[in-house]
Image 1 (cartoon, rainbow over the protein chains, first blue to last red):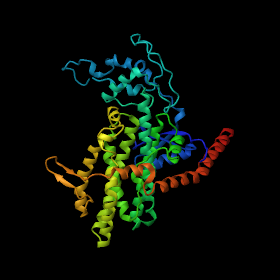
Image 2 (cartoon, each protein chain N blue to C red):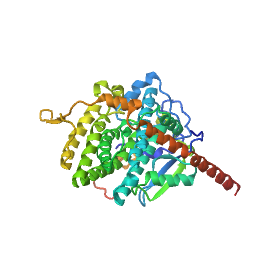
Image 3 (cartoon, chains in turn red, blue):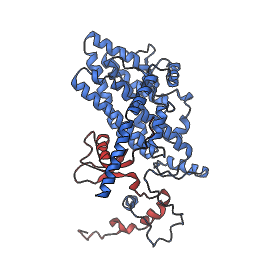
Image 4 (cartoon, each protein chain N blue to C red):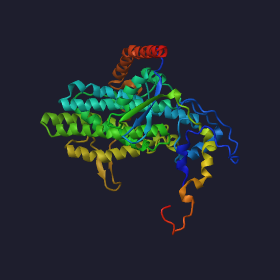
Length: 96
Length: 353
């Protein structure tokens, strides 16, 4: 068995149709960005799942940590006025 | 109005806004610089909190705290599943060059390519638990890791390709559909993709047997022979009877197993027997009988000693399957090395330019 090190890991993002954003679909190992793109085509778009592919080195992604969930996302919870439904609109007022 | 969806717009925020003194002082854990980072280890005290999360239906994601036993069990389960997809290519690969028509050949090629893809989705899901691809492959090649014992049976005729699609993939689908709802996010998402594709596999298998069973007497006999050989091993795919299943209770509590072995097996029998009748083939079980009181088919005893022997490595093709994988891995070593060297060379050239 060879002792070659693992090919680097890439995250794969696919635009499923024109007009929508790329969405994370999974990951794969490949030696280079070009090879990752080819592999992503074979692994993740065998059934017309996409019109465009991004591959990003997994190591280049900075992710928030589960422990930070509260400080990051809790503040949004007490600012319900950011949603239009917070405000009472008098029924006589139209187009608001 | 629910504001939960706001969270998805906030994933790029690095620091909480300043004006939130009310937030309890949770020690800020530095972000792990990789999506696939090792997760925080869970203390025994937090196991109860973990279980509560699972019961609330919250998906566990790669960097979430999780009990070590959950992580290890999942690595074993997902990697066995991945190995099964990879080794599962071998019995069918045997017939690609001998498919009866060009169309059947193209379909079988696409099917076997799907199996490779399924293996890759699953290896990636396993890697999010902090194990490397190299480790996983090494465990398969050394014989330490298991794969589905069904792939240790030979594919003697073209009808076997039909039986594998119809029965083996059919049984796999039955196993996998509940797993789309399992507690570990990356595994559940991989299963969703896989299940979508498996249904093609099952239908192409049934289609092969349908053609044979409507063909000459010799073709029909070939289809019957394939059913005779694949029926019982397919029922064994669901694993030992519930009362003997070693890991079931804990796995069900963790929601990485959602329906019992016997429950899935019964469901498989109930849906497959009428399909066999449609094909005009006889299920090789003299005890098979519809039980109107239960509303299910009763089946005869399963030869578990055969199942255990195949798992121990005494099946007809255990040696051949692993030898083929090892050979492929060794033959591919220069390709893996060359691709890395080529990528490194181009990186250097790009840096100079």
